[in-house]
Length: 187
Image 1 (cartoon, rainbow, N blue to C red):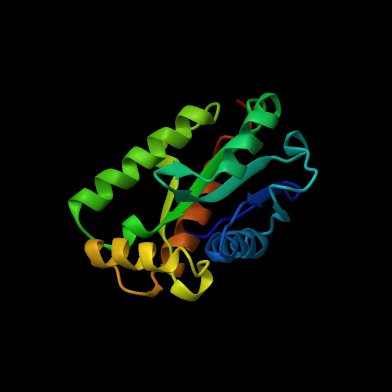
Image 2: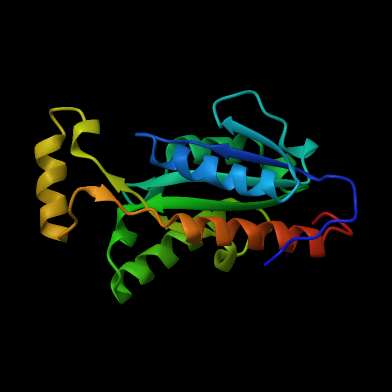
């Protein structure tokens, strides 16, 4: 899909929360895709002082931990709920569930997407980006490594980077296109 623009550059906030850096990498790829498409991009950690209402589009990204969207993302949405409900907003998550390509993993990812849409005003679970993450045992605290290793062994998830960069770029381009084609009024 080639995004053509005739109007003045639109702005996008790509705000992320991340525990071990996996989601930062995805957020950087989202931001770079938006820049290449001609958008003015502000990439920021959700912990920064941000004003989401000043952007044409807000993209939020955070990992799934213990079957929930990362606490910093949930707190960001609660803190900025009024602004996000007046701004086009979408989100993505990273999780190791998607390192496996089976129906159970797909169903679990859909459940995560529905949980996120319940938090975000005016979002659609089908638009939530669902991306596999990275398993790097060295990034876990020493006391957690044996537990994580046992859990991942039981789930048959091997150490590695499962992110699909082409899928991340394609999802981002769709989000930008949706915003351009429906930008006559904010939600």
